[in-house]
Image (cartoon, rainbow, N blue to C red; front, top):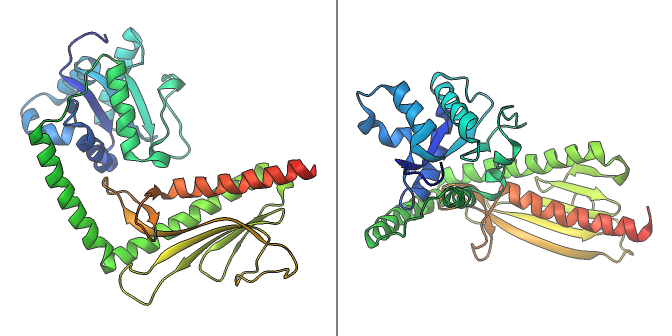
Length: 321
């Protein structure tokens, strides 16, 4: 079916709770490929038989299908229709046309879907990476990516200006401070979840986690020390608020003082991060001084835990324990 003509390049299937995410993905793609998103097609669809329409879109009129998948997908009236159309098409032509983006933990993918149609990177790598993957799938399935016209670029620039103004408004307001605390809590909880999960399988790594007196946590293993701390000014805006992450050979106490003044402490790196919002309205962290190098919370956690465990692994291999 890859060489056939299609009404749409991409059709999105999702639960109502994920409509915002679908719209963000759609906004990145719609000037470059033809997309089907129910909420943007409602006027065109008025008066038509919804069941027939959705069956046609997902069974034959779309080049590829992207499912924002939760375990409840396929169990609601409309997603059940979409799932049936996808399965019927897959049974006849194979499932290369469909890709699931899992949003639940743990992922319980449908038994009928081949594992290679699962792409799990949206939480780790963000919406822009997801859009790039979707464009690649369109090309893989015989579609062309449209080069943006001058009008497209102007409209896109207008939207970017609006987004930037809204971002600046949030980041200089009490609303922004509330979001800072919420995302910092998410950062700490993500670190804790990862460590507690690893402790179950790394029982011989002497892996410990504790609260520190800077509203954060310390992670310790074999004398290596990773600390996450939170600093804020007495203010009702995010200005001056940042996260401090530091990695050492040598352990400090919960106040940040050296436990052994005679030990040669070595610092492997540090980060000062401020809360930020990217173009896709995702929350994360940028370099405190420059405002560059935006990273999602999960990416920050992965980056620092990778450094930490690589150092511990090297130490254990060199010392044979």
